[in-house]
Length: 169
Image 1 (cartoon, helix red, strand yellow):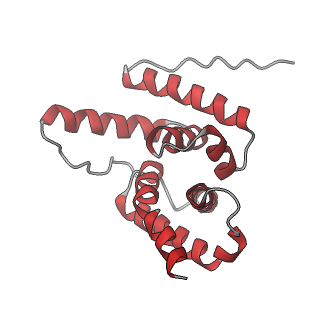
Image 2: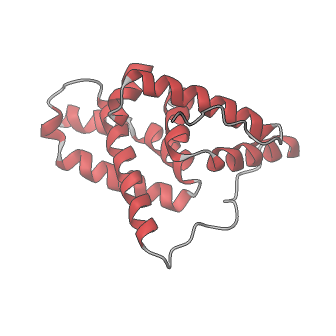
């Protein structure tokens, strides 16, 4: 039991980074991590050492986050936060501004693109692990990542992202 507990605890820093990237709010991120840990611990026997534990926990977090988005969309009185969360200022003022801009642009990405970008770019999961965590095909992960990178680059440069998808009748 100690070994199982240590494996879950070792995932907490990665879960916190991912949750902060998803929510953009440290308090909501902490709540999301706590919900994820609670669910992972109560369902640990279902994991049965199939696949990567970290990917499994990211999958739980992703599902909890999406459930929360759906629930808040149903409640008309809940509105998304207007301001950006405070981002700690690093060594220089320019770094702090760049981080704030990056956080703002990340939050502007659609959730499915932001999720894939964070899992692969920040948490360094493989495409296969990301597909497993999100329960989507590998090709979907690759296309979402490509669109997320293009859109993020456009937003960071201050230009409107180009929508290359066309509707076919």
